[in-house]
Image 1 (tube, one colour):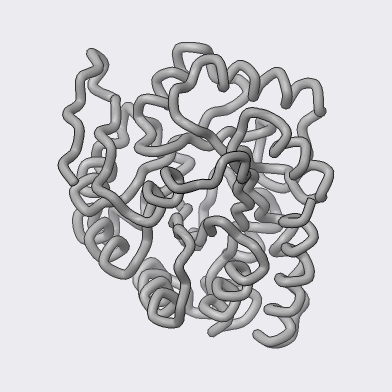
Image 2 (cartoon, rainbow, N blue to C red):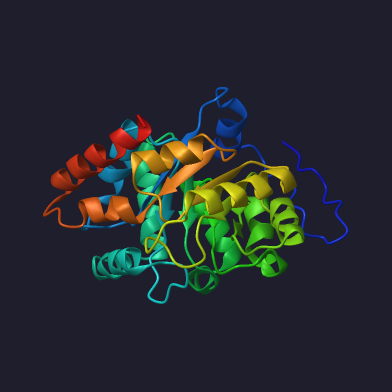
Length: 281
């Protein structure tokens, strides 16, 4: 599928990436179906748990999954994901290992869209061109990099487009109207609304403030958007689904549900028991 040329004067519009699972799933999404997107730290809580947990989350109702790239110096992650990343690194997680786990998960039957979420430094160390190629070849569908603004995004957005990876930028409650439009243009298929000003898992947005924020994004953005940070309970998921966002992201609460699991089997059971009620919200 040919890409659409960039036409915006600011040069930040994102040509639609070649067809992949994410773009196809968005296009084929049944009317009224809202997405549930869990975030998983690989090789957590135990080494070797990544692939079984990805498959369990798919079976429990995940419409797409974010898989973290553990990093020792995160900017957007709260205490829960920081601790999970530290344990993952101790269990041998690395950019290369995560890409291997993606390939293994696809071979084992993972079919939902998979987005890699992390920070730009490990990707630059790996090599942006090589990373985009290897991630796409393994079966990843998109990238979310919280510390990469669109003004500097071409370092990874260009090779991502070439390899059919969607790039997702973040919109904060403090983003101006023009900034929302800019991020909407730069994101390949959808953008990611951060429900609170701060890091993951620490606090939740007030219902009125969140509704006002998401209503503003809906008026200004042309592409779909999801909501994350601070979501953990069925009623929160339902509130997001009842609004203009097409999906809700759950991360820290899922990791807390599995963090004490002594083995992969128990982690799979805990993840399934956590996610199913949210999907049925």
